[in-house]
Length: 169
Image (cartoon, rainbow, N blue to C red; front, top):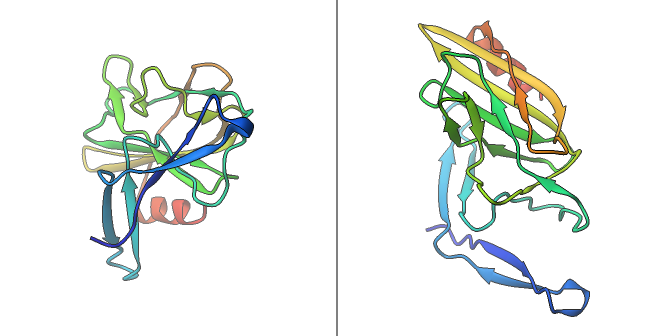
């Protein structure tokens, strides 16, 4: 479609110096998106193989990795709310794309996999819409050291106010 190829680095456990073999993943979903307001285009890569991606800096292999969730207030769910986590120093964002209704928790779809480096500085951005009113939360945090949840409180705001706050990040 666009000439972009997605690769996953596989580290060989038996290789000297933890050599990486790059494997092409042709079934990664690549979408071209255009911002109607600015007419700027960018690509969104969704690959079930990579977990999360950073194109400008590798994650240090000796890091401790965990998974975590984000808890939203009652009345907010995957039908009226979305949550992103921005990794401030890695210059990436990840969508919390799964929702556990009984626990009101957004997660990342990983069951037996912990893809996030502990103690990384993050910003949790959550936006919801209920009964004609927008709500948002921008929380500074760090990736917790254990499988924990980060609770968010959503505050009412206009769409313009939310766009301004997110644009300032």
